[in-house]
Image 1 (cartoon, rainbow, N blue to C red):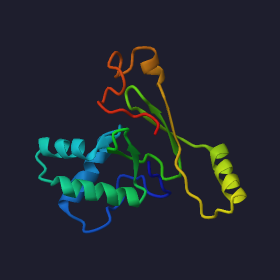
Image 2 (image 1 turned 30 degrees about the vertical axis):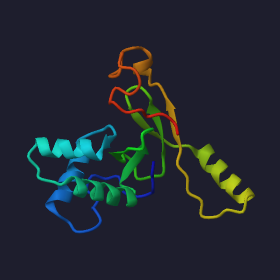
Image 3 (image 1 turned 135 degrees about the vertical axis):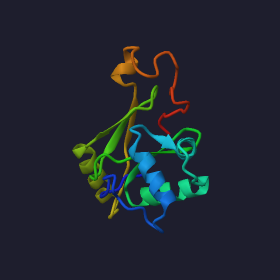
Image 4 (image 1 turned 120 degrees about the vertical axis):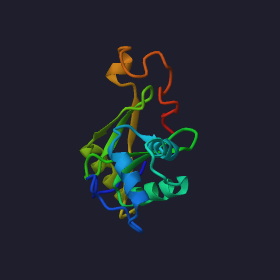
Length: 161
C-alpha cells in the first residue's frame, strides 16, 4: 500500500493532462468506499457509458497514488486495488480478510518505533506503510457482507504478505 501525506479530497487534481477520461476515473473512485481494482473501475465506467481505456485507468490511478490521493493495497496474487483516501494525513489500515473492509487508523506508537529503529540503524528520511489484517466485527459475527463466502467476498485474497 502506498500512503502519502496530502490530498484525500475528491477535488484533488490528477497529474498529467486534464482530460474527461481522467476526470471520469477520479469521479468513479469518489463513488466507492471499498478498494477496487483498475479492471473493476474500468468495468464500472464502461457500464455507465464512459469511454475510458483500461490503460488510461491504470495511468490515472498511478498518478493519484503518486500524489498520495489514493490508498493502494496489493492482493496476494499481486493485483493492486485502490481507494480514495478519506484523510490527507499519514495513516495505516485495518483490513478485513473476509469482506475487504478497510478502516483508516493513526498509529503514533508505530510512527515513533519507525523513527527509533531507523535512527538506530543510521537511516534517515524514512517512510513506511502498515496494514493490519484481521476479521471485522460484522464478518466475525456472521452478519457481514462476506458471511459464508470464505476469504474475501470481493473475490480477492487480502492477506498479509
